[in-house]
Image (cartoon, rainbow, N blue to C red; front, side, top):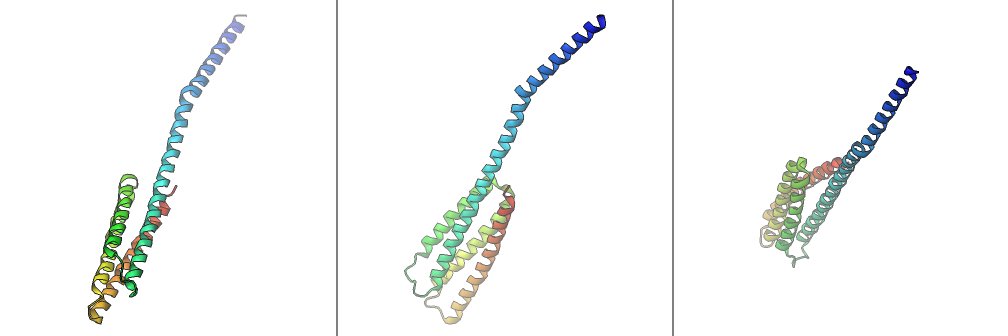
Length: 170
């Protein structure tokens, strides 16, 4: 009889302990773990949104550059505001710099390379626009050659940035 009472008390204590433990897990541990996973999911969504925004801005800048380069190369387009359009490209590219510095620090070096090549590209476009009229044919040819080199370096750095962004998506 004493053994039965001891076993019954022991079973009750074990049951109560298990109940208390279950309540603790469901009351404290589970919400903590759930919040942590939700925060990670939110962080991933936020990072992916920034990556998408940078990607779209890069494509927008590329379109602006291609349009400007086409207009400068085309002799029938003489009423273009190349300075204003270069300022628009520069302003738009500053958005990328801000987003990468704030949210995608691992791409800072690639972004600096991209910005350098972008600057050389728009400078070559501006030089061609300013210099192709009134220059001897040989000097104009050098301006076109410089633009082609700057454009190639810019395209390479753009492809590098787009590839790194694609790899960063989670």
